[in-house]
Length: 119
Image 1 (cartoon, rainbow, N blue to C red):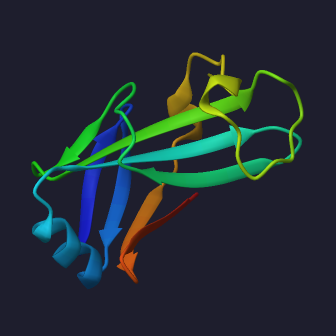
Image 2: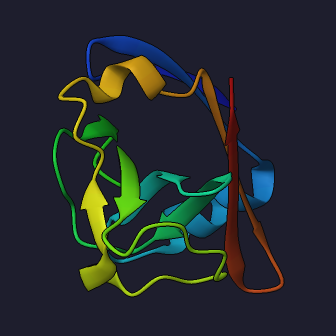
Image 3: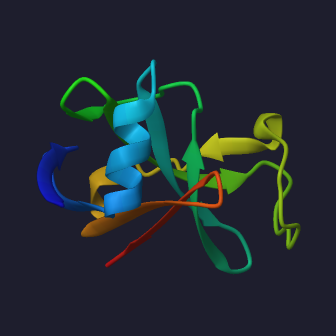
């Protein structure tokens, strides 16, 4: 199912697979989703689930919140797959909407939430 939401003053198309819709309906608490765009030597895109809400949030019903966070490392260029939260800082552009993706796709497979976003 497709949804259009407004986040940071722009439109974002959100697609939930049938499995994602079923898993979302079965939850007792809302699902918080954060799209992270990480700038380092390369650009990395990640979707985090059940993280604390930061910044502006868009809701789909009462069960799903969406946020976007462009970040960079405090320590300079890092090629690690993971970066401790205390090593990440918000990208200092002051205009995160410039980097907001056009679409987000959420799925639920083998008991795990999965997500991808793009431009």
